[in-house]
Length: 266
Length: 61
Image (cartoon, rainbow over the protein chains, first blue to last red):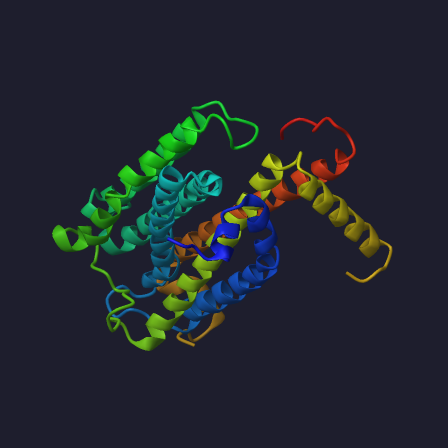
């Protein structure tokens, strides 16, 4: 298979660093605009649910968190496959950087779900098929983090990659939980409501309830991408600190800051 | 707007104790997910710049 050049380059820490530099400010602006719009729209302008009243507005932060938390795991499974098959070192960094982010967003989905469940189900917590499978996902994230850090780390990605491969295997094995989460509401007709948000079907809500959700889902994806890229850049700086390109970059960055402080334009 | 007054908006029809903490915790965690790696990135870049001339790499942080 002949891969396009940009894909090769994206797998190299140095080029990934260079290619993501311009993306950071745009992702930050998009995150603020999307989440600001979607949240204000959902909180103040969307009509109340005819059964749940205003508690349903928690949906605008709960559903995006649940979606992004699962997709983060899918991405880590893909990175794990790439690591095991092609030994691309960036994919190990991706798993390491993404796991804590995914864990925190999974915890968010569980928290907002519990807070939504209290007025809606009458209980903070129910061992429902969906909630249970998401708890399993949280522990899979913890497992990946623990496994990755259980092996002594090499200063550069090189020689000893047992930790990376062990974490990659857990990412792949744990991916069986993803369809279980997704279809749990259909397979077991327990308390959690079925999917209200599908890209391939007409939504089961009117547009004035549905569109703020769509905006916030996009906003969550932007925040996730931003957080992951920043974490990856920080890890790349740590691993490449002895290389000439990084020394050049950090030196020019310092010079740029000094010039800006002296009143020069950026 | 689906509320008659700002007070109604804050009260969330009695669901304020559930709605507002859900949003507050969500945005706090999202912000932390961006600010913590940003601080880490800046610190490591400063370290790399500070040790750019030395053969020693200044240790791992």
